[in-house]
Length: 109
Image (cartoon, rainbow, N blue to C red; front, side):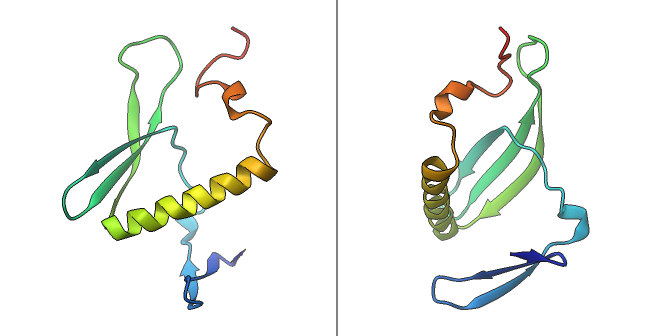
């Protein structure tokens, strides 16, 4: 739940969290591509907005956010994403996500 820029969540052990969302971050950023790198100590995720206008090659993109995280957190993130994707697919998704095509595909051909 978000109220007054604050998100209220709970950890798996029930510990309550109050997370502040600064106004300048409320809009978020759009990403339609990601690059993942890792070392023995951390993962780096670059979230990228690719430009699908025109037919230039290579496609142009800009990193809109870079996030570094621990391997332990990556496992927790994968679990949360898997759970949420499952809920999305069973309750909200179109009958087939594949029917939507790739980002930037022109539906009119």
